[in-house]
Length: 224
Image (cartoon, rainbow, N blue to C red; front, side, top):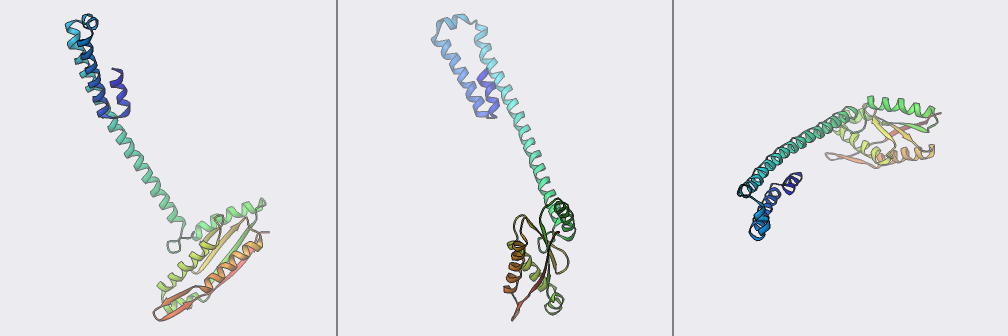
């Protein structure tokens, strides 16, 4: 019976049937070829042993089916938990980020800023940069808010590309961005914001027949 019940561990119906067939074949081959084996068994044994193998095989199949259903239930439960975790992560991210620019929002930035100050008081080097789009109200009034949204998206993309993985960027207000920079010298932080300023200056947007460019003003301060 050991091969039959061992086959249950593999959750393979064919393997259970294969084990059963092999047991029955070997039993009858021994019965036909080995006189001492045949003389050892009674007529009842000759009927009972195959019957017992059949009953055990069906028990194994029932156990395998029940175990398979349990595995399916476990898989579904695990899948549901994973989907819930992903949904919670998405909701958490949405609550922390600005929908338009995909940067952190004002509230998230305040939390990061308070933590950054705690690190700075323990000796960590941090820099704060505030980025403001020049004459943004005039742009919105002239070309409309949808065009203004394109500019916000473009600038946020530039900021994301220029900062490092350790830095934190957020949309602080309507046309304002805030950047916390860590593990940089002041000169390195200055170069990052200067790169942002230059890249924004080179960027152009097309509105109907007009080519529009924008500039930003940036303030930079290190913690002391």
